[in-house]
Image (cartoon, rainbow, N blue to C red; front, side):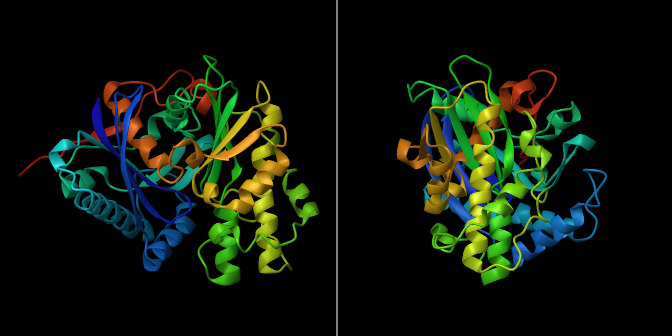
Length: 369
Protein backbone atom coordinates (compact mmCIF):
# COMPACT_ATOMS: atom_id res chain seq x y z
CA UNK A 1 0.00 0.00 0.00
CA UNK A 2 1.17 3.53 -0.83
CA UNK A 3 0.19 6.71 0.95
CA UNK A 4 -1.17 9.15 -1.61
CA UNK A 5 -2.59 12.66 -1.58
CA UNK A 6 -5.15 13.59 -4.22
CA UNK A 7 -5.90 17.13 -5.38
CA UNK A 8 -9.00 18.19 -7.26
CA UNK A 9 -10.19 21.56 -8.52
CA UNK A 10 -13.50 21.01 -10.27
CA UNK A 11 -15.52 22.86 -12.85
CA UNK A 12 -17.51 24.58 -10.10
CA UNK A 13 -14.43 26.78 -9.49
CA UNK A 14 -14.98 26.72 -5.73
CA UNK A 15 -11.52 25.69 -4.59
CA UNK A 16 -9.02 22.88 -4.07
CA UNK A 17 -10.05 19.64 -2.38
CA UNK A 18 -7.29 17.60 -0.71
CA UNK A 19 -7.54 14.01 0.53
CA UNK A 20 -5.23 11.26 1.71
CA UNK A 21 -5.74 7.53 1.24
CA UNK A 22 -3.68 4.36 1.49
CA UNK A 23 -4.08 2.18 -1.58
CA UNK A 24 -2.37 -0.23 -3.93
CA UNK A 25 -4.39 1.10 -6.85
CA UNK A 26 -6.86 -1.80 -6.69
CA UNK A 27 -8.22 -1.57 -3.15
CA UNK A 28 -8.48 1.22 -0.61
CA UNK A 29 -6.62 0.23 2.55
CA UNK A 30 -7.71 3.21 4.62
CA UNK A 31 -9.06 6.74 4.38
CA UNK A 32 -7.03 9.58 5.80
CA UNK A 33 -8.08 13.15 6.48
CA UNK A 34 -9.32 15.61 3.89
CA UNK A 35 -9.09 19.36 3.51
CA UNK A 36 -10.20 22.29 1.41
CA UNK A 37 -8.61 25.50 0.22
CA UNK A 38 -11.22 27.89 -1.26
CA UNK A 39 -10.40 30.14 -4.17
CA UNK A 40 -10.66 33.83 -3.39
CA UNK A 41 -13.02 35.99 -5.42
CA UNK A 42 -10.01 37.44 -7.23
CA UNK A 43 -8.74 33.96 -8.08
CA UNK A 44 -12.18 32.91 -9.33
CA UNK A 45 -12.29 35.97 -11.55
CA UNK A 46 -8.95 34.98 -13.12
CA UNK A 47 -10.22 31.43 -13.69
CA UNK A 48 -13.50 32.61 -15.22
CA UNK A 49 -11.53 34.82 -17.62
CA UNK A 50 -9.32 31.85 -18.51
CA UNK A 51 -12.40 29.73 -19.21
CA UNK A 52 -13.74 32.42 -21.52
CA UNK A 53 -10.46 32.69 -23.42
CA UNK A 54 -9.79 28.95 -23.56
CA UNK A 55 -12.53 28.42 -26.15
CA UNK A 56 -10.07 29.83 -28.71
CA UNK A 57 -7.37 27.23 -27.97
CA UNK A 58 -6.37 24.76 -30.65
CA UNK A 59 -3.35 23.34 -28.80
CA UNK A 60 -3.08 22.08 -25.23
CA UNK A 61 0.49 23.23 -24.62
CA UNK A 62 0.09 27.00 -24.97
CA UNK A 63 -1.09 29.55 -22.40
CA UNK A 64 -1.98 32.82 -24.17
CA UNK A 65 -3.51 35.82 -22.44
CA UNK A 66 -5.02 35.19 -19.02
CA UNK A 67 -4.32 31.45 -19.19
CA UNK A 68 -0.70 31.93 -18.12
CA UNK A 69 -1.76 33.87 -15.03
CA UNK A 70 -4.52 31.36 -14.33
CA UNK A 71 -2.00 28.51 -14.44
CA UNK A 72 0.17 30.30 -11.88
CA UNK A 73 -2.89 30.86 -9.67
CA UNK A 74 -3.91 27.20 -9.88
CA UNK A 75 -0.42 25.87 -9.18
CA UNK A 76 0.16 28.20 -6.22
CA UNK A 77 -3.27 27.47 -4.73
CA UNK A 78 -2.62 23.73 -4.90
CA UNK A 79 0.80 24.14 -3.28
CA UNK A 80 -0.75 26.18 -0.47
CA UNK A 81 -3.47 23.55 -0.07
CA UNK A 82 -0.90 20.75 0.34
CA UNK A 83 1.25 22.71 2.78
CA UNK A 84 -1.75 23.63 4.95
CA UNK A 85 -3.02 20.06 4.83
CA UNK A 86 0.28 18.59 6.01
CA UNK A 87 0.58 21.17 8.79
CA UNK A 88 -3.03 21.00 9.96
CA UNK A 89 -2.97 17.21 10.27
CA UNK A 90 0.59 16.79 11.50
CA UNK A 91 1.55 14.65 8.50
CA UNK A 92 5.24 14.12 7.84
CA UNK A 93 6.17 15.05 4.29
CA UNK A 94 8.35 11.95 3.88
CA UNK A 95 5.36 9.72 4.70
CA UNK A 96 3.72 10.66 1.38
CA UNK A 97 4.62 8.48 -1.59
CA UNK A 98 2.82 10.35 -4.39
CA UNK A 99 0.50 13.28 -5.10
CA UNK A 100 -2.22 13.07 -7.75
CA UNK A 101 -2.81 16.51 -9.34
CA UNK A 102 -5.79 16.95 -11.64
CA UNK A 103 -5.36 20.65 -12.38
CA UNK A 104 -8.16 22.94 -13.55
CA UNK A 105 -10.03 22.01 -16.72
CA UNK A 106 -10.49 25.07 -18.93
CA UNK A 107 -11.39 23.31 -22.19
CA UNK A 108 -12.66 19.84 -22.97
CA UNK A 109 -13.24 19.09 -26.65
CA UNK A 110 -12.59 15.36 -27.11
CA UNK A 111 -14.06 15.31 -30.62
CA UNK A 112 -11.02 17.40 -31.58
CA UNK A 113 -8.74 15.25 -29.38
CA UNK A 114 -8.22 18.27 -27.18
CA UNK A 115 -8.49 18.58 -23.41
CA UNK A 116 -6.72 21.29 -21.42
CA UNK A 117 -6.06 21.19 -17.67
CA UNK A 118 -4.01 24.12 -16.44
CA UNK A 119 -1.59 23.69 -13.54
CA UNK A 120 2.15 23.07 -13.76
CA UNK A 121 2.88 19.61 -12.34
CA UNK A 122 6.67 20.03 -12.38
CA UNK A 123 6.46 23.38 -10.59
CA UNK A 124 4.06 21.94 -8.03
CA UNK A 125 6.44 19.06 -7.30
CA UNK A 126 9.20 21.56 -6.64
CA UNK A 127 7.00 23.77 -4.47
CA UNK A 128 5.76 20.97 -2.21
CA UNK A 129 8.84 18.75 -2.25
CA UNK A 130 6.94 15.64 -3.34
CA UNK A 131 6.57 13.62 -6.58
CA UNK A 132 3.46 14.49 -8.56
CA UNK A 133 1.41 12.58 -11.13
CA UNK A 134 -0.40 15.03 -13.41
CA UNK A 135 -1.91 15.35 -16.90
CA UNK A 136 -4.10 12.30 -16.31
CA UNK A 137 -6.59 12.81 -19.16
CA UNK A 138 -4.29 13.51 -22.09
CA UNK A 139 -3.36 9.94 -23.08
CA UNK A 140 -7.01 8.86 -23.19
CA UNK A 141 -8.05 11.77 -25.40
CA UNK A 142 -5.03 11.34 -27.69
CA UNK A 143 -6.08 7.71 -28.20
CA UNK A 144 -9.59 8.75 -29.22
CA UNK A 145 -11.32 8.52 -25.84
CA UNK A 146 -13.51 11.11 -24.18
CA UNK A 147 -10.98 11.66 -21.39
CA UNK A 148 -13.83 11.68 -18.89
CA UNK A 149 -15.00 10.53 -16.51
CA UNK A 150 -11.87 9.08 -14.90
CA UNK A 151 -13.24 8.32 -11.44
CA UNK A 152 -15.23 5.11 -12.27
CA UNK A 153 -12.37 2.80 -11.25
CA UNK A 154 -12.40 4.44 -7.83
CA UNK A 155 -16.18 4.22 -7.58
CA UNK A 156 -15.89 0.50 -8.31
CA UNK A 157 -13.30 0.02 -5.57
CA UNK A 158 -15.65 1.70 -3.08
CA UNK A 159 -18.76 -0.14 -4.26
CA UNK A 160 -17.09 -3.50 -3.78
CA UNK A 161 -17.18 -2.84 -0.05
CA UNK A 162 -20.93 -2.26 0.08
CA UNK A 163 -21.93 -5.89 -0.46
CA UNK A 164 -25.30 -4.92 -1.89
CA UNK A 165 -27.18 -6.12 -4.96
CA UNK A 166 -26.71 -4.09 -8.11
CA UNK A 167 -26.89 -2.38 -10.35
CA UNK A 168 -25.47 0.59 -8.43
CA UNK A 169 -24.95 4.01 -10.00
CA UNK A 170 -22.58 6.50 -8.41
CA UNK A 171 -23.44 10.05 -9.47
CA UNK A 172 -20.91 12.84 -9.14
CA UNK A 173 -22.60 16.25 -9.30
CA UNK A 174 -19.85 18.82 -9.74
CA UNK A 175 -19.88 21.54 -12.39
CA UNK A 176 -20.75 18.72 -14.81
CA UNK A 177 -22.58 15.56 -13.67
CA UNK A 178 -21.25 12.09 -14.42
CA UNK A 179 -22.30 8.56 -13.55
CA UNK A 180 -20.63 5.20 -13.00
CA UNK A 181 -22.76 2.07 -13.54
CA UNK A 182 -21.55 -0.91 -11.49
CA UNK A 183 -23.09 -4.37 -11.63
CA UNK A 184 -20.92 -7.17 -10.28
CA UNK A 185 -18.29 -8.31 -12.75
CA UNK A 186 -19.91 -6.59 -15.72
CA UNK A 187 -17.61 -4.03 -17.31
CA UNK A 188 -17.85 -0.52 -15.95
CA UNK A 189 -20.08 1.91 -17.85
CA UNK A 190 -19.65 5.63 -17.31
CA UNK A 191 -20.35 8.98 -18.91
CA UNK A 192 -21.15 12.60 -18.32
CA UNK A 193 -24.91 13.11 -18.12
CA UNK A 194 -25.18 16.86 -18.52
CA UNK A 195 -24.88 19.97 -16.37
CA UNK A 196 -24.28 19.53 -12.68
CA UNK A 197 -23.95 22.71 -10.66
CA UNK A 198 -22.41 24.89 -13.37
CA UNK A 199 -25.59 26.35 -14.86
CA UNK A 200 -27.14 26.78 -11.42
CA UNK A 201 -24.02 28.41 -9.96
CA UNK A 202 -23.71 30.82 -12.89
CA UNK A 203 -27.39 31.80 -12.60
CA UNK A 204 -27.23 32.28 -8.82
CA UNK A 205 -24.10 34.43 -9.14
CA UNK A 206 -25.82 36.73 -11.66
CA UNK A 207 -29.13 36.82 -9.80
CA UNK A 208 -27.93 37.18 -6.21
CA UNK A 209 -24.18 37.78 -6.18
CA UNK A 210 -23.68 34.53 -4.24
CA UNK A 211 -21.40 31.88 -5.76
CA UNK A 212 -23.89 28.99 -5.35
CA UNK A 213 -27.26 28.00 -3.89
CA UNK A 214 -26.22 27.00 -0.37
CA UNK A 215 -28.22 23.97 0.83
CA UNK A 216 -30.62 24.44 -2.09
CA UNK A 217 -32.35 27.14 -0.05
CA UNK A 218 -32.96 29.51 -2.97
CA UNK A 219 -34.46 26.80 -5.16
CA UNK A 220 -36.51 25.12 -2.42
CA UNK A 221 -39.56 27.47 -2.55
CA UNK A 222 -39.22 28.16 -6.28
CA UNK A 223 -41.56 27.01 -9.02
CA UNK A 224 -40.10 24.80 -11.76
CA UNK A 225 -40.72 25.81 -15.36
CA UNK A 226 -41.46 22.29 -16.62
CA UNK A 227 -41.82 23.45 -20.23
CA UNK A 228 -38.32 24.97 -20.12
CA UNK A 229 -36.90 21.73 -18.68
CA UNK A 230 -38.66 19.70 -21.39
CA UNK A 231 -37.21 21.88 -24.13
CA UNK A 232 -33.73 21.54 -22.67
CA UNK A 233 -34.02 17.76 -22.63
CA UNK A 234 -34.55 17.76 -26.39
CA UNK A 235 -30.83 18.39 -26.89
CA UNK A 236 -29.51 15.31 -28.73
CA UNK A 237 -26.75 14.83 -26.16
CA UNK A 238 -29.21 13.35 -23.69
CA UNK A 239 -30.36 10.60 -26.05
CA UNK A 240 -26.81 9.60 -27.01
CA UNK A 241 -25.55 6.35 -25.52
CA UNK A 242 -22.48 6.36 -23.28
CA UNK A 243 -19.60 6.96 -23.33
CA UNK A 244 -19.94 10.72 -23.77
CA UNK A 245 -18.51 13.80 -22.07
CA UNK A 246 -18.96 17.54 -21.88
CA UNK A 247 -17.13 20.81 -21.50
CA UNK A 248 -18.33 22.84 -18.50
CA UNK A 249 -19.78 25.49 -20.80
CA UNK A 250 -21.48 23.12 -23.24
CA UNK A 251 -24.93 24.21 -22.07
CA UNK A 252 -23.99 27.73 -20.95
CA UNK A 253 -26.54 29.34 -23.28
CA UNK A 254 -29.37 27.46 -21.53
CA UNK A 255 -30.47 29.95 -18.89
CA UNK A 256 -34.07 30.75 -17.85
CA UNK A 257 -35.16 34.29 -18.66
CA UNK A 258 -37.85 36.54 -17.21
CA UNK A 259 -37.87 34.60 -13.96
CA UNK A 260 -37.36 35.24 -10.25
CA UNK A 261 -34.16 34.05 -8.59
CA UNK A 262 -36.06 31.32 -6.73
CA UNK A 263 -37.91 30.07 -9.81
CA UNK A 264 -34.79 30.17 -11.96
CA UNK A 265 -32.80 28.24 -9.36
CA UNK A 266 -35.60 25.69 -8.99
CA UNK A 267 -35.82 25.24 -12.76
CA UNK A 268 -32.07 24.72 -13.18
CA UNK A 269 -31.92 22.32 -10.22
CA UNK A 270 -34.80 20.36 -11.77
CA UNK A 271 -32.98 20.36 -15.11
CA UNK A 272 -29.86 18.84 -13.57
CA UNK A 273 -32.00 16.18 -11.83
CA UNK A 274 -33.86 15.45 -15.07
CA UNK A 275 -30.67 15.07 -17.11
CA UNK A 276 -29.23 12.65 -14.56
CA UNK A 277 -32.45 10.60 -14.58
CA UNK A 278 -32.42 10.58 -18.38
CA UNK A 279 -29.43 8.22 -18.40
CA UNK A 280 -31.43 5.42 -16.74
CA UNK A 281 -33.10 4.12 -19.94
CA UNK A 282 -29.69 3.97 -21.64
CA UNK A 283 -28.20 1.60 -19.04
CA UNK A 284 -28.26 -2.21 -19.34
CA UNK A 285 -30.58 -2.70 -16.36
CA UNK A 286 -32.58 -0.38 -14.11
CA UNK A 287 -30.36 0.68 -11.20
CA UNK A 288 -31.43 -0.25 -7.67
CA UNK A 289 -29.27 2.37 -5.95
CA UNK A 290 -28.19 5.88 -6.88
CA UNK A 291 -25.39 7.20 -4.66
CA UNK A 292 -24.80 10.96 -4.92
CA UNK A 293 -21.38 12.55 -4.45
CA UNK A 294 -19.87 15.95 -5.17
CA UNK A 295 -21.36 19.34 -4.34
CA UNK A 296 -24.83 18.21 -5.33
CA UNK A 297 -24.89 15.78 -2.41
CA UNK A 298 -25.05 18.80 -0.08
CA UNK A 299 -28.15 20.16 -1.82
CA UNK A 300 -31.36 18.75 -0.25
CA UNK A 301 -33.46 20.28 -3.02
CA UNK A 302 -31.40 18.46 -5.65
CA UNK A 303 -31.72 15.17 -3.74
CA UNK A 304 -35.49 15.63 -3.40
CA UNK A 305 -35.88 16.27 -7.12
CA UNK A 306 -33.76 13.23 -7.95
CA UNK A 307 -35.94 11.02 -5.71
CA UNK A 308 -39.03 12.35 -7.49
CA UNK A 309 -37.57 11.40 -10.88
CA UNK A 310 -36.14 8.02 -9.77
CA UNK A 311 -38.98 6.60 -7.64
CA UNK A 312 -38.16 2.94 -8.31
CA UNK A 313 -34.71 3.09 -6.68
CA UNK A 314 -33.01 4.42 -3.57
CA UNK A 315 -31.29 7.80 -3.82
CA UNK A 316 -28.82 8.55 -1.04
CA UNK A 317 -25.86 10.75 -0.29
CA UNK A 318 -22.45 9.10 -0.26
CA UNK A 319 -22.04 10.50 3.24
CA UNK A 320 -24.82 8.20 4.44
CA UNK A 321 -22.63 5.22 3.50
CA UNK A 322 -19.57 6.42 5.36
CA UNK A 323 -17.98 7.74 2.18
CA UNK A 324 -17.05 11.40 1.77
CA UNK A 325 -19.13 13.18 -0.84
CA UNK A 326 -16.90 16.24 -0.60
CA UNK A 327 -13.54 14.45 -0.72
CA UNK A 328 -14.55 11.77 -3.25
CA UNK A 329 -12.88 13.23 -6.33
CA UNK A 330 -9.71 14.21 -4.47
CA UNK A 331 -9.52 10.65 -3.11
CA UNK A 332 -10.07 9.37 -6.63
CA UNK A 333 -7.08 11.27 -7.99
CA UNK A 334 -4.90 9.87 -5.21
CA UNK A 335 -6.12 6.42 -6.26
CA UNK A 336 -5.50 7.19 -9.96
CA UNK A 337 -1.99 8.43 -9.21
CA UNK A 338 -1.11 5.09 -7.64
CA UNK A 339 -2.68 3.23 -10.58
CA UNK A 340 -0.62 5.39 -12.94
CA UNK A 341 2.58 4.50 -11.08
CA UNK A 342 1.68 0.81 -11.42
CA UNK A 343 0.78 1.13 -15.10
CA UNK A 344 -2.82 0.07 -14.39
CA UNK A 345 -5.70 1.26 -16.57
CA UNK A 346 -7.40 4.54 -15.67
CA UNK A 347 -10.06 4.30 -18.37
CA UNK A 348 -11.85 1.66 -20.42
CA UNK A 349 -13.81 1.40 -23.67
CA UNK A 350 -17.14 1.59 -21.80
CA UNK A 351 -16.13 4.52 -19.58
CA UNK A 352 -14.48 6.94 -22.01
CA UNK A 353 -14.71 5.19 -25.38
CA UNK A 354 -10.96 4.64 -25.56
CA UNK A 355 -10.15 1.74 -27.92
CA UNK A 356 -8.56 -0.38 -25.17
CA UNK A 357 -7.90 -0.09 -21.44
CA UNK A 358 -5.62 2.88 -21.05
CA UNK A 359 -3.26 4.07 -18.34
CA UNK A 360 -2.12 7.67 -18.22
CA UNK A 361 -0.51 10.46 -16.28
CA UNK A 362 2.92 12.10 -16.28
CA UNK A 363 5.24 11.86 -13.29
CA UNK A 364 7.12 14.95 -12.10
CA UNK A 365 9.82 14.06 -9.60
CA UNK A 366 10.90 16.43 -6.87
CA UNK A 367 14.63 17.00 -7.19
CA UNK A 368 16.21 18.29 -4.01
CA UNK A 369 18.79 21.00 -4.58
